Every structure is written in structure tokens, then in C-alpha cells.
Length: 280
Image (cartoon, rainbow, N blue to C red; front, side):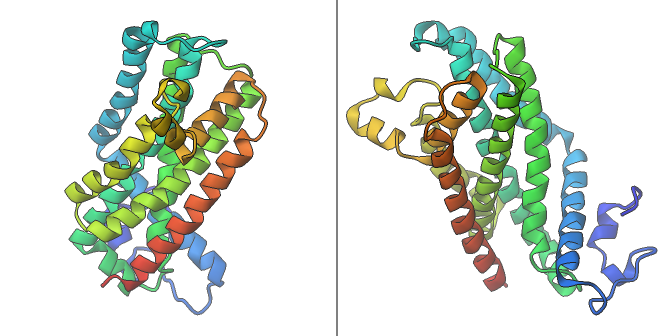
């Protein structure tokens, strides 16, 4: 795609785009799906860049949580064997990725309401491109958000054990972001408007994030809450990322986290694709 392509060009029927004549017949199926997914991804990224206030406000929330727990609550929380700021950052990384996925639900509902999705359906393009384009745009945004939060963490005293461990943790965070992007895509398709998508998305994500090992060890929780916190996907992801960045024994934490991510991705992608195919 040329750098001069605009959102209006992308929303236009493919046969009408300047300098591009596309027919279904000569395009290999896989190449067709990949090309269309990347086109929709670029469209979504351009749309986000044209609304920088959304990116700015999305970044402010995790920075505020970092400063709040680092300098206000952190002094009252004791974690044996590790500085609290090092314990804290794994939770902030996961919270940033999981909460940031709400943009998928909101963007999808806006496209549904404006008729863009209906226009995509009428074009000679892969039907999977609408959803996969959203998920891939989330990957790019998550990479930017994680980079920012690593920089903020280093500024407040966070010290990863090794560069290799930190990069492995970033890879795991991106996979987690993909899994929850499919969840948010399903939410957007089901509820149908931006306000409801935000509320419905947080309804599940909020208790999962805070009833976890993100900010305090689960051992300090009541028994019934600890049982829930120790056996849910957010805690599994946080514990795996914490082990990677702090050089702790990996044991079963990484395989357990990957199993949760794979299960969420498969289930949520299947439900979202089914819902999208049935949507009218």
C-alpha cells in the first residue's frame, strides 16, 4: 500500500481505489487473506494515529497506577525476597495489555454503527480481514504501550534480571494481548455500541485483574479469594512474566500461562468468528 492511502481510500470498493485493480480469481486464498488483513490493520492504525488523544489517555492510566503503587501504597506492602517495584511491574505490564484491548471492542462497534463493516462485506475481500485486522492493530499498539511502560518502570527503579528475560516477557505479553483482543472483539460484536462495549469488557476484566497477584501476593487474601486468584489466567500470566523478568525459577509457570493464553485465543476467536458470520 502506498503511504498516501487514506481511510477513505480503504473504505472505498477495491475496484475503485486509485492504481489498484483487484479480482478474486487470480489471488491465492492465503495470500488474499493476509493482504486484506494487513490492509485493514493499516487502516485501523491510521485511524488510531489520527486520534492521538486516545493513545495518550490510554497511556496515562498505567503510568498513574505505577506511580500510585510505587510511591503511595508500595511502602506499606512487603514482598519477601524481592523489591516491591520489581514485583509491581509485572502486574502493571499485564494490566496495560489487558485493559488496552478495550480499543478493539470500541473500534469494532464504531465500524458496525457507521456501516463500514457492511461495506467490507460487499467487497471482494477476505471476510476474516475485519477481525484479524483489529487483532493485528492491537499487537502494534501493545508493543508501543509495553515499550513505554518498560521505560516508566526503569525510571522508578525497576531492574529486570536480564535483557533476554525481558524480551521473552514482552513476547508473552503480546500473545496475551492477542488472546484478549479476541475476547474484546466478541464483546464488540455482541453488544453493538461503544458505551456498552466498555462496560461489558470491564465487567469481566476488572475482577480478574485486581483479584490476582498483580499488586499484592495472593497469600494475603482470604482463603476463598486466594483460591480464585491462584487459579485464573491473569495471575498465571503475571507470575510467568515476573519469573522471566526477575530471573526466578520458571518451573510450571510459563507452560501454565501459555496454556491459558492458547485456550482463551482458541475459544474467543471461534466465538467471535461465529458471531461475525451470523451478524447482519
